[in-house]
Image: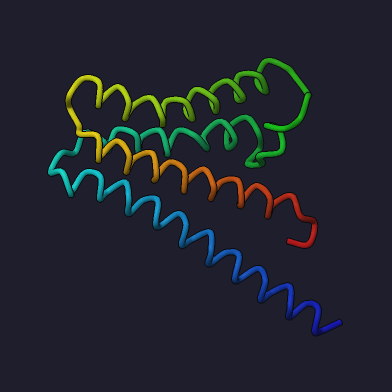
Length: 134
């Protein structure tokens, strides 16, 4: 019994360290997209990284479970819409900035890589919170 608790604790620490590394890599790429090209316009998409979890915190009770449920209602539907709009904004902002000529193609692709890593981090966190053992 003590061995399984110890093994679960080690698995939890490894998962937590992996999530922290992925999140840090995403933020590092976000900053590098700005610093390499000496242009801080791509930092606008970091605003969306702050806005994406807000509907979960305010309307979902801090859980991501409501995103995959079929339950509806005014606040639940509003939270799903705001989460989707924030996620689309994270991709759209670098595209719009590139189209307007404010950032280069390299910065846009670094932003996309940062967003991909961020999404993978969120999905891994969601999967980890669905497990009952955590």
